[in-house]
Image 1 (spheres, rainbow, N blue to C red):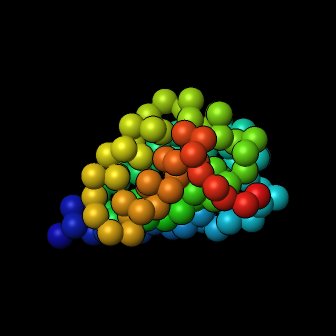
Image 2: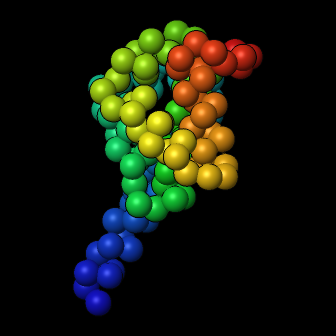
Length: 115
């Protein structure tokens, strides 16, 4: 029971953190600061590989929001593990695959987002 409770707590903590980051990234005024912060991108990359699909989806949305800012794209593309993690998520089906493909396109320079 304790390990189950600990797992549930860790899942909720991860979901809470990634949802807060996603909400911050939704505001265009925060996007450059998030990418410049030393811990945010590596954390988002870790969330892309999380076993909880809700955590992965929120992380994908945050990455997508951040990639909407052209000034962020080179740094994001160069962040260790970003492109590989997006490729891995693109192996899935459904909405997560779409979000990963959309972010991948932006970071590869093929996207057509408005700023």
